[in-house]
Image (tube, rainbow, N blue to C red; front, top):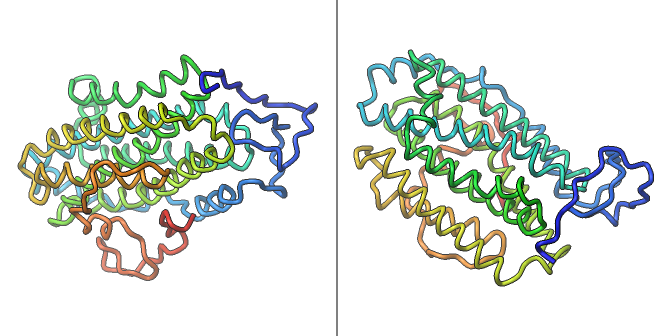
Length: 345
């Protein structure tokens, strides 16, 4: 039944008599009223409140020192790597903003999960604004970075690969393709984004582009909740629709992750060209393998690589802790309101 077409939910459905216990992640028959006094997926409502607590705005980050670094402090390879990494992030958040609203949420029939998908789409749009602030702050020719997805064939090839599974869902909205899109989200949010973030943290570790790294910290805090969202949707579906989780599906998902590791490893080498201190090819490849293993294990699939985390300092750069001195400013900032890790859910 995994090739069964999944129906878009009705935006107004007064004839539905679906009760809270009858709600389904997809394939339900919701009234489309957001009755949030009745919750089936409590983790979703908890995540909604956490995402609200995480609210931030790109203008909070001081980008002025980055312009000086970009124009005089970066090596030519660091500067090119920065542009390429930023261009990749711009594409992925642009894709996700549209994908979530137009391609995923229309099939999700739980109101509490609809809430957080809409919130995630808002956050992806906010990230796009963040990148605009970054580009405007550092670049004399903003079009050069925004057009890189057209002019850089390696970037274009990677973008085509990332978008393919979502395009397939749009063309052929079956239950299997919707589930594959959920796994693809784990790859997008949990491998491609995290790998890209590590480049900015590496520059910051050497004292460069500190504002950019601070912006990325805010963005990554949002990405943690996005990962938890799709991780929990997949795990909840294992109970709700165990018939979808066939051996054949697992083999296809594993192959998706293997290919993602291959694609992202090649991209990491392309960004750094072996010339970025602290990011050797071996470290890049192992970090990406570690990320893949972690994402797979959290949805009940065996690890593929069984490697250790090679750059744990990246996690320290990414973390927000209560009353902890900001890495990039000489002041204390309380970020505890939105602190989260996977094990909280």
